[in-house]
Image (cartoon, rainbow, N blue to C red; front, side, top):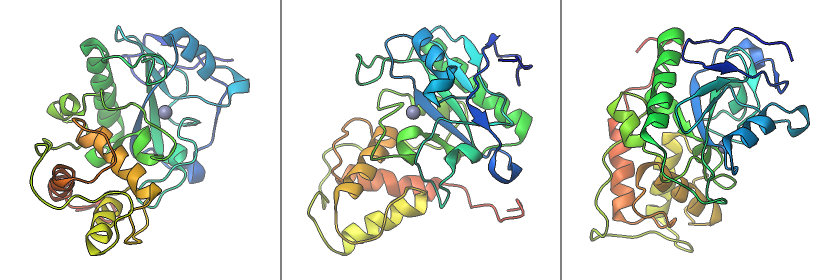
Length: 262
Ligand SMILES: [Zn+2]
C-alpha cells in the first residue's frame, strides 16, 4: 500500500489500509464515530484494519499508551460503521471520521480506558475540529448509537464526561438512579412510550414511534444508557433514564440551518 502524509502531527505512524473509497457526493465529514477494537491486542486489530480481506478500516487507531496510527486519509471514506443510522443518514461512513480505540471489549475482558489513551482521543477530536471546522457536539457518537441492535462499542466504560469536560461531544450529568416515577419497559404500550421514542428519534437515534416498547426500543434505550446513563445499562427506561434524555435534548444547541448559519 502506498503511504500518505498524515492529516495531523499527532499521528505517530501511518499504516495504510486498502479499505476505503470515495465519500458519497464528495461530502465533507461532519461526524466523529468512536469504536473500541474488541480484539485481544491492538496490534491484531491494526492488522485486521489494514488487511484487504477484512473489508474494514478506520481513519485512526488509538493505542492504550496514547499512540495514534492513521490508516485512511480523512478525505476518504473508511469502512467502520456498517449498517447504521443517525438523524436521517444511513451512509454513516460517508459522513464520518472513524476512530478505533484499542480495548479488548466486552468479549475479551472489557477494561478501563487509560487516561493517556483518552487524552489522545480528545486531542485527535480537537484537531479535527480545528482543521475542518467544528463538528457539532451531538455528532461525536458511539458506534452503538448508530447501530444499537448490533454494536456495544465503545461501551459503558468509555468516559464521555471527560471528553465533555474538554468540549468534545455533548453530555449531561446523568440523573440519579432509583427516582420515583413511571418506568417504561418491554411490552408496555401507550402515549408515554410514544413520547420516549419521539425524544430518542429527535435526538438522532434510529427508532420508530410505534407506541409499543419492543426489541428495537429496548436496544436504543440500552445504547442511550451506555453513552449517557452508564450506572445501569438494562434497556429499561426508568425515571433516571427519561430525565437524563430530557436534559440532553434541552441542552443541545439550536440546530444549524442547511446553509450552516444559526
Ligand atoms: Zn465499532
